[in-house]
Image 1 (cartoon, rainbow, N blue to C red):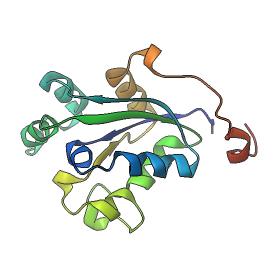
Image 2: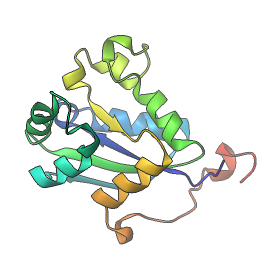
Image 3: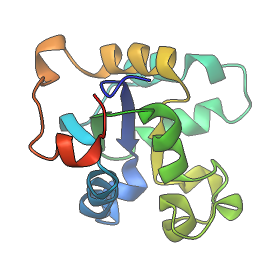
Length: 154
C-alpha cells in the first residue's frame, strides 16, 4: 500500500450550503491525509452526467444530476495510504441512516439524496474522477511536514 494513493472527495451542494466544508476538511486532515487539490466549482450538466455515467440507467439519475446542478460543489483530492477505502469509511455508508455516528454522513445527513459527500469507490474510479475534475497541474506534489509523524514507513 502506497502512502501516495489518491482519492476524489466532493462536498455536494447540501454540504456546501450547510457550511460543512471546514469540518469535512478537518476530519481528513486529523486522520493524517494530505490535501493535494481543491476548488469550489459549478460543473455543467454534461460534466455531471459523465461523472455519474455508471448510474445513467438508474431511475434516480435525472434527479441526481438536477440536484448536483443546484449549487456549488467543493471538489478535493486527498492523498495517503489506503485513501480510497479509508476516505469512504470517514464519509460513512451511502445511506446516512446506515452510517455510524462519527462519520460525516452519520453526523450530518438523514436522506440518501442529501448525503453531503461523494467519495471514490476505488483506486481506478478515483483516477478517472480526479482526471475529470482536475487538470494535472492543479494536483500538487509535496511532502507534508507531518508525514514522518503519520507514517512509520514510507
